[in-house]
Amino acid sequence: MSEIKQISLFVENRPGRTAKVAKTLSDAGVNIRALTIAEAGDFGVIRMVLDDPEKGYKVLKENAFTVSMTDVLAVEMKDTPGGLYEIVNTLGLNSVNVDYAYAFVTAKAERAMLILRVDDIAKARRVLSEKNVKIATKEEIQAI
Amino acid sequence: MSGYWDPHIERMPLEDLHALQEDRLKSVVRYVYDHSAFYRRRFKEAGVEPGDIKTLADIVKLPFTRKVDLRDNYPTGMFSAPKSQVVRYHVSSGTTGKPTVVGYTKGDIETWSESLARAFTSIGLGSDDVVQVGYGYGLFTGGLGAHYGAERIGAAVLPVGTGNTERQIELMQDLGTTAIACTPSYFLHIMEVAEKMGVSIKKDTKLKAGIFGAEPWSLETRKRIEDATGIKAYDIYGTSEISGPLFTECYVQKGIHVWADMFLIEVLDPKTDEHVADGETGELVFTTLHKFALPLIRYRIGDLSIMNSEPCECGRTHPRIMRILGRTDDMLIIRGINVFPSQVESVLMKIPEVGDHWEILVDRKGPLDMMTVRVELTETGFSDKIGDLMKLKKKVSKELKGVLNIAAEVDLVEPGTIPRSMGKAKRVTDNRKV
Image 1 (spheres, rainbow over the protein chains, first blue to last red):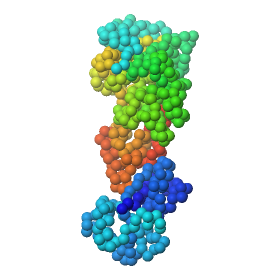
Image 2: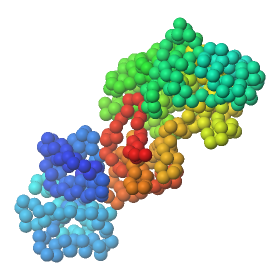
Image 3: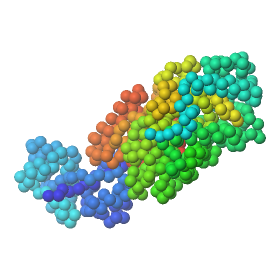
Image 4: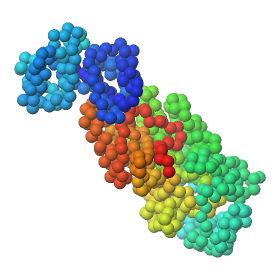
């Protein structure tokens, strides 16, 4: 199964940089499904799930951004108390480490979508599936 | 591997070379005493007369000349030749003070060209080569100097000057440039632009040699350039006061040959003014042995280097100076510690996560000097985990501290944000108000 490709960007922490990213994607007709910005003082990392990651990667690179693609898991999470616990507890019990995570709610919205970067993606997929946690496919993310 | 331009001189046995130097030293001392009011006054103040100079060792009796003398005697107060014999002037940009004017007789231009003809031959260039001169033409000595040297060996010269980088790369392909002379920082910029244009210097051009100078650069930068482009990168050295660019490494790449029939070099401990031994770092002091418009006696150039007088494996007997460690003017004093930008460069260029362009900012916070080194993050260095980037910052900082002995703040910046230079790179911004 092909993994979901997250696009990550290195950006300096100065006015207008995020706008430049957004404009570049918008001009290319690429839609952002989910986005998070991690900041560390004078710089930050923008992480995004896009409807067309290959195109997004290409246009950002052409515009001289430092950009990379990372495999992440998109996991459906019950939008009720305990929804997150079920997932991260399963990973923790199986010694899978979460590097970072962020969530978004889809338009269809009974469920929230949790994006996870883990140190062992194959194992995470297996142990979550065993717990009947639904893992979204690339196509599903594209079709949201 | 490559021939000699003037084998008789270049391979002259040391004792003959020293005898020639001694003759020429005596002549030049007599010449400046007779023709330059400045030197006559200077010699009198020092209590020395031309007749006191009998051997090479007597040179220590002569007074030093400094850049400030050229400024104080602006424009031509130090010249020895009458105006009728001067055929060209060059004027330094005055980056470290008032501009200085240098002049040349017809013979001086010949000697200068001859010096570079020997040098270019020593890196294997000849009449089949196309030499692209990417140094500035005009008042700066780099462009015309390299131009005359390359023409003298019969190479085809492409006098493109600085800037217009895309055109430089197109011409390099169209005319089959085999060697380029420019500043190392400008060549790094050319590499970057070529990549953007989809041109591989390795595959799409005939470039085999780079002649890089006019600013200090490190062995680590050489390695980066050579690895990325497949060319050989040679160091060129000189400064306008002694004519301009004059000397390069030979193909062996183990030091820059300084032609002893044209120049006498001393290496001094800058604190005591005593000669240091071969292999020890000191300040270079040049005496011109065959220059007539503006001969200089014991000129303190301000560059720090190491001399090696052993004959080179290329067969040349003339002494070599090792890579210039820095100019005393470029040295920063940060919290009382001497820091050369070239040291910073040598650390950074060993770290693959860091790009080719960098700069140093110096500031004062309260009583404390703060040094910030800004580096561009490369694609390979980018991790989307903040922790990895923080680790990289720490690693760069630690390596800098290991070499400089002072702590430096490291800023990671986006590629392309540090200003690119066409000529001499401006690596340091010192915002301290002293």
